Structure formats: structure tokens, C-alpha cells
Amino acid sequence: MQTHQNYINGAWQPALAGGTREVINPANGQVLARVADSQVEDTKQAIAAAREAFYGHGTWRRMSGPRRAELLFAVADAIKARADELARIDCLDNGKPLREARSDVDDAAACFRYYAGLIGKPQGGIYEVGDGFGPMHAYSLHEPIGVCGLITPWNYPLLMAAGKLAPALAAGNSVVFKPSELTPLSAIALFEIFEQVGLPPGTANLVLGTGPAAGQELAQSHDVDMITFTGSTRTGQTIATAAVGNLKKVGLELGGKSPNIVFADADLEGAVEWAMIGVFFNQGQVCSAGSRLLVERRIADRFVARLAERANAMTIGPGLENPDLGALVSQAQLDKVLGYIETAKAQGARLVCGGSRYTEGDCAKGFFVRPTIFDQCRPDMDIVREEVFGPVVTVQTFDSEAAAIAMANDTIYGLAGGVFTADGARALRVMKELRAGITWINCYNPTFNEAPWGGYKMSGYGRDLGIYGLQEYQQVKQVNINLRPGVVGWYAR
Ligand code: NAD
Image (cartoon, rainbow, N blue to C red; front, side, top):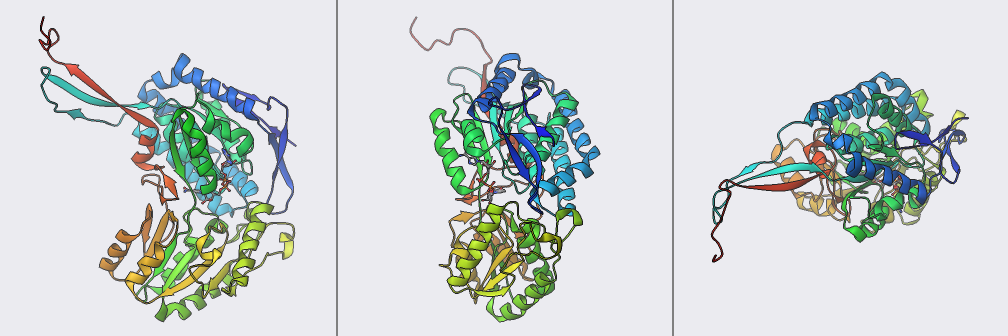
């Protein structure tokens, strides 16, 4: 079995202390691969390499825009060329259905292409300024931040990697990337691609390992200029606290408990299918999942009955067999989700369908959970308040638009939200009232490389993707030019 290594300063190397850890296939519990189990010293070495690349030889940040773009376009092409293999890898260590993994690969390639295309596009501005010291000309310049630490979770392994690495590199930074220890395999393939296209040594470094051992140093180190993190709100708080030492820039894409509001006039069959995409896609392990369904009371029974009928018909199995629902990522995630289901039952939510582990056929040893619906949920229940991150949805009912909005915003999170109605003005009114960074009208969950992604409230701050995503990895310099050099005559002579 292959043991995968860290990629530091343009070379593959084992963890300095020699440790390795197993990567598990969640569909059957078997070991898929071994990877370096990095410790603080490995991360320090990677940070030093990134610093030398940025502040030392500076090859990448000084490279002409067109040449930098060419290399990132080559990364996109190489991802496409290995698309089937990459989809299979994400499918194997994450558990997701193959068609979802394949769509992630296409999006990851498109992400590199999008940011490569932004290189060289006009940025900044020229300013009319006062002439108290004589005539002046001012403009702004967008520059890379320096050494960026990037940390991602396990739910979209390749896509999350692309969503951070592509803009960080397009902006001219040097990076140290730490993927989730549960799903590192597609990131390793991506760094093989970086090596193959010829990114300068030290520009992009990969450390494999756990958060506390290999990730925390990226937040803590005074040699890192920015940390961008996607993961749980709790870890985000740890990262933000650790980052205070040198006041590095922090970007946080955190958890959610997002409302999906269905009014009685909505296309019922369409709303049911989108609600399923909203909460069962990727086994519900989606930060923006519409995990709280808020349904207008007069259609609630019909809506829930149809949703349950469709949920019960979903196929479940190993991702490679392309089911509707694959395995959850790990035993720990399985235990967490089943725990929430038991608590919901104990707290009086009514189980409509699912509610248990799925062990049929070849799924006996995998981490599968049936699609689960609870109705008669109260706002104080754990299942309504906390992020489950599994194929579990709660249903609450409302009688008025105002009640729906109040219920939707009754959460510490503010990542996403959806509204289904045939009334266009109402859709816009409700969407405007949602305290959330990502919203959908008459659909749920499609995401785009071109549009900004991020949360309000405890779902974090900063934005990934789109032009905002590029600007996250830049700082802005003001340049002031004296158009009449020489003596100003301000002080007596
Ligand atoms: P997690 O917070 O446990 O881990 C995320 C990453 O952080 C992993 O790489 C982990 O190794 C690392 N990490 C853990 N502790 C660390 C520490 N002390 N210092 C540095 N790094 C550390 O989250 P997870 O379980 O991998 O992912 C699920 C969570 O991610 C959910 O809460 C989900 O909502 C969130 N998420 C958010 C978005 C978004 O865009 N807002 C997207 C996907 C996932």
C-alpha cells in the first residue's frame, strides 16, 4: 500500500518524525492508503519554504501575469485530463456518489480556469485628490498578502482545495495547504499536478495530518500572513484566537443551520425535489444544507408526505455504484448523526422516515444513514438548533410571512437560506430579510465559481469565490505621486 508524503519546497518527503496515518474508505471501513502524519515541525518547514518563495527568491509573485495565468490554466487542463481518476479518489475517501464527485472535479477545473482568467484584469482605481501640498496623483495597487495558510474540511475535498488554492495563487501568494486528514488523497493528486506544470519551489506546499498537530501552527505562526479556514464554527473560533498573535488576516467559512422556506403557492413537486437536493446532496454533509424546512401549515402534511415518499425511494450504497446517497465520511460522523437522531426522538420530534443506520447488502460495514425526516419540531430542540451535517431534515410550520422570517433567522448561524413561492415580490422580500450570506429562490444549493460564498453571524467572515474571493488574498496599497517635485514651502526656511 502506498504511503503518501508531504510536498514541501518542490519535493515529496515523509513527515520529519516518520509517522503515518490511515485513510479509511467509509463505504466499507477498509484502509485505502497511508499518508504522512505531520507534526508542528513539518508545518514549520513548509512555512519556511513558503516564506523563502515569497520574500526570498519571489519567483512566483514576480512572474509576469500572463505566465502565471498560463500555469494556472495548465493546472485546470491537467485536472480535466485526470477527471475520472480524481472523481474516483474523492468518491473513495469521502464516500460521495460518483456523479457528485465528477461534478466537483469539473467545478475544480473551472475554478482554476476562472482565477487564471482574472489575472491581469484591471483592479484598483485612480483617484482625484486634494492639492494642499501641490498637485498630486493617487492610485491603488492590489498586491498578494504573502504567506497564506489554507485549511479545508472533508466534505468537498478537491473542490475546497481548488476554491482556496486557485485564488491564493492567482493573487501571487505562496501557500501552505492542509487538507482534512480524512480525505487528503485528491489534494495529493492536485499537488502532483502543481509539480508537473512547474510551479516554482516553495510556492505551494502540502502538509498532511491532523488539525491540532499540523494545522494549528498555520494559525499561530508569526511567519504566516494570512489564514483561511473552512470547517466547523468551533475550530474557526480556535483559529481566530490563535491568529491574534501577529494579527494575521483571517478568513472563516464555518457551519450553518440554514432555513428552507416553502410557501403554499410554490410548485410543490419542484420544491420537494429541491428540498431533497438541499439536504440529501453529499449525504447532507454540506455547510449550506437546507436542514431546517419551514413549510406553510396548510400544505405541510401534503409536502411532508411527498418528501418522505421520495426520500424512501432513494438508493443507498458505495459511492462508486453511483447511488443517490453514499456513506458518511467516518465512524465519528456516523456516531454524531445517529446521536442527534436519538436526541431528536427523545426530545419529542416525530420521526417521519429514516432515522437509522443502513446496513443492507454490501453496506454492512460502511457508515450509511437512511435519509431522515423529523416533523413536529420545536425551536428549542437540539436537532433544530445544532448543525447535524448528515441526511437529516427538520420540519416546522408557519402561518404568515413574518413568522417564517422570524423562524428562519432564529439561529446563531447565517450561512444560507432558500425560499419557494410563486409570488416574485414575496420571494424578494423574504430573501432580503434573511440574515444569511447565500440565498436561493425556487432552488436550493447550486453554487458557482463566479459568485461570492460566505456567511453572516457565526457562519464566519470573508468570502470565497468570485472576485471577492480573489480580493481576500490581496492587500491594497495606496500610491501617491507628487506631480511637481521640489520644495513645497510648508515650513519657514
Ligand atoms: P473541522 O473544523 O473539524 O475541521 C476542518 C479542518 O480544520 C480539518 O482540516 C482539520 O484537520 C482542521 N483543524 C481541526 N482542528 C484544528 C486546529 N485546532 N487548528 C487548525 N486546524 C484544525 O470541520 P470538519 O468536520 O472537517 O468539517 C465540517 C464542518 O465544516 C461543518 O461545520 C461545516 O459546516 C463546515 N463547512 C463550512 C463550509 C463553508 O463554506 N462555510 C464549507 C464546508 C464545510
